[in-house]
Length: 107
Image 1 (cartoon, rainbow, N blue to C red):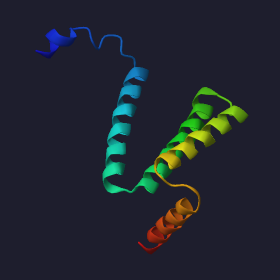
Image 2 (cartoon, rainbow, N blue to C red):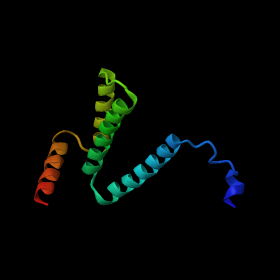
Image 3 (cartoon, rainbow, N blue to C red):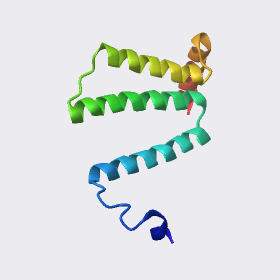
Image 4 (cartoon, helix red, strand yellow):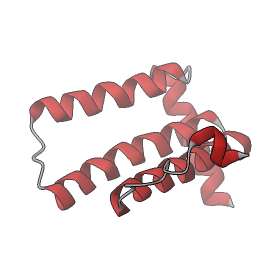
């Protein structure tokens, strides 16, 4: 049975913070699966960028972290690498962004 495999005290000591992290990661994984299934690469890139910005904002608001130049450079590099990984650079990325905005405006 499951209790024999992981032991009776596997969940002992889980605080609300740990449970919040577990639930956050589980929901984040499900959300990424839905985005990949129903949206295109540009939408996934925008959602990844938005998650970086929101996580930074939450860290400032909840934990009092400060955003310095290195944080901004790191965020910019990660965001750029997400778009590069998606195969969108330069003018091609701008065309896809405008096409997406046009499609959303017409919907």
